Length: 283
Image (cartoon, rainbow, N blue to C red):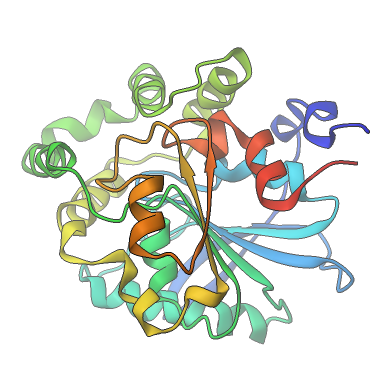
């Protein structure tokens, strides 16, 4: 049987999803998706993490788009979504709560939310109801090294901002966060690093957001009854979170947890395996 992702290797580079803007909690928010919504397909909403934009999910979305309506949203202050005036996490919570209702009001019914990295925290804020939620390499609690890193970046944000988005530095960060440095995965990281949107104002804002990330417990929502609709995909070599696959199996035994070989950037470095593990994606 033919592997769809392999057969379309690199096709994400020339695929141009349709971009449209919607007001979510008063903020002009960028979405990317199919040119035409197909009611016969399941519909996914993908949410990236802090410091990225929709490009990081493009290979994974491309693998799935023939059988799903795949939408990607840029977080506040990321990609082509505006930077909010309100710098608090209360704004993010309210913005997240309005995501699904806003799409529904525009005739887009989401059947599953898929979040990566710190995007999982955003997803945990959502008014998700019975909608299934999948978390990819969630950051349950950040490591002391990462917390130190965010504090340094925040204190030097105005000095670092002019060069932080340079291609060579972006590629280096991507490779440090990955584990499977095979040719295709490295090619994805290079493509994302070259094409992701970056501005100095966005970087300053993102540094402010990252500084306070440790104040929130990712699994607050799990204790509110989300376990039956939650699944988690962990990476075998993820250096971001203090908990690994085996820790979570003990902490939240009722949740469907899968393990995929790779590092923190699974949607880039192992998007084919991720699509197969999550959706058994073959043609």
